[in-house]
Image (cartoon, rainbow, N blue to C red; front, top):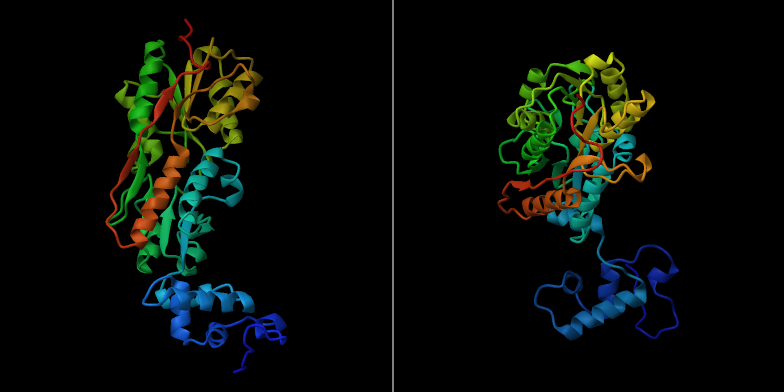
Amino acid sequence: MPTHPQSGSSTPPEGARGGRTTLSEVAALAGVSVSTASLAFSGSGPIADATRERVLAAATELGYTGPSPLGRQLRSGRSGIVGVVIGDHVSRSFRDPVSIKVLDGLVSELGTHGVGVLLVPAVPSDGAADPLVASAAMDVGVLVWGARREDPTHDALVRRGIPVVIGEGTAKPGAPVVGLEDRRGAADLGRHLRELGHERVAVVALPVAFPERTGLADADRLADVEKTPTRNRLEGLADAGIRPVAVWETEASLVEHGHAAGRALLDVPPAERPTAIVAQSDLLAAGVLLAARELEIDVPGELSVAGFDGVDLPWLGADVQLTSVRQPFEQKGAALGRAALQLVAGEDVEDVLLPVELVVGTTTGPAPR
């Protein structure tokens, strides 16, 4: 092992000559044992302030920035990483403002505690978990958009002994759930439409499960599949006395999928059209509005359109304010992050249910006669 000159020598230290400086070299320069130098960096343990300062001064001289993160991980048995399962293709997730805002709240909460994030698409096509779920280092898995009854991603994490946080969806034993009062929000929206006289209401639904599917679906089937946002919001409309005349199940929650649904539901004889369409996301609702414009259907004179999320959609026009159920995106992400941190710390974690709010805009009006 090389020896190092004392401070003030004209010979450059080992770290300055190239290669990574080690803690042993810092300890030798400071004249302390390696264990004492380690305590100086940990910020804990029985070590005098003067000794800690001497070690840190030696580290500065040698260009040593601290113990290896990998070494810390090996000693602690933790990776310092939270696996965030977005459950969709990355390209889709980063086109969705809801996904971006939830992830922003989640990453911000974890970042303040020095915890990193691994994004896992986890789009099962053959009933198996994504390889990252089965092998990547992580301390906690966060299923941002929920779990299903038969969920290979959740099951793979549990087999590895990795605790799980669920964002909405079906509850699992031992996994805290961060959810929304979306059923109540949908009921508030349903009552709003009923008060406006709407009886022919169609729904553009969020994707329910894999494999991907699209097109007309049976409302009873979707409301009974499992505990999902789709089911909660259909049940909320039912609470308000609304039974949809048609439900269109989408492949993804993007504008083009809402547009396709809108064309299918509206490009029919006027007597067969719904007088209101409830889309289960604002991007889907925006697509419906674009379809109505193409078909020269007046909103809200001939058709009312509502969404769910409360995102900004300025490109629809300055005079268009979508009626929507607003959800707290960043707060949801932060709550997922806090739950993950509590699990890492070995604490008991309670479920969280976040409130939503109906915001009436310019896209809903009295039912046409």
